[in-house]
Length: 161
Image 1 (cartoon, rainbow, N blue to C red):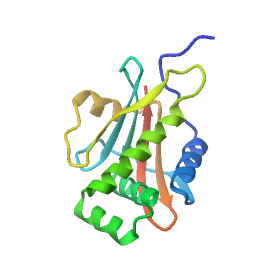
Image 2 (image 1 turned 120 degrees about the horizontal axis):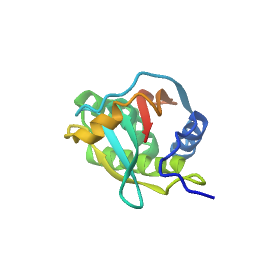
Image 3 (image 1 turned 180 degrees about the vertical axis):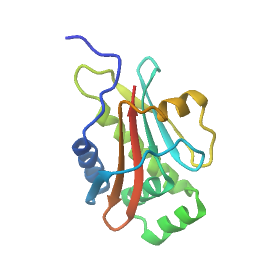
Image 4 (image 1 turned 45 degrees about the horizontal axis):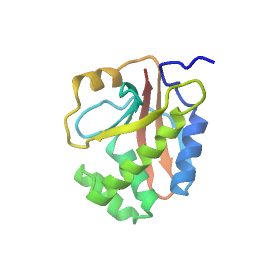
């Protein structure tokens, strides 16, 4: 068997199942708008063992805060405060990072490169040009609205090379 050099786009079912299992709440996934790589959003950069960028996950502040809050079972009011402030408090940032770290599992399938989370950019940080270009690509991507039971909605884009 030959290993491909790109990550396959995961199914919506795989993403939903992983998120539900991780946060312990129902997660709905529907069609959504592409999430741009602007500074107020969160960009997860996934790389292969050779440090080649293989995939991205771009989430708006709402998705990042709601998933991170659900992971730690934080009160919804605190999550809403973070969204209103357009930033993630340190513990919420750590929880969002952990959700994105575990999300790398949806890319690790047979005959594809091993992928891991390399870094989480934002919110309120610069996005390098090559990452912004990849996140704006129109080909191999999934743009969804997620709704975490008890926490609310947000947007998530997954882009594979």
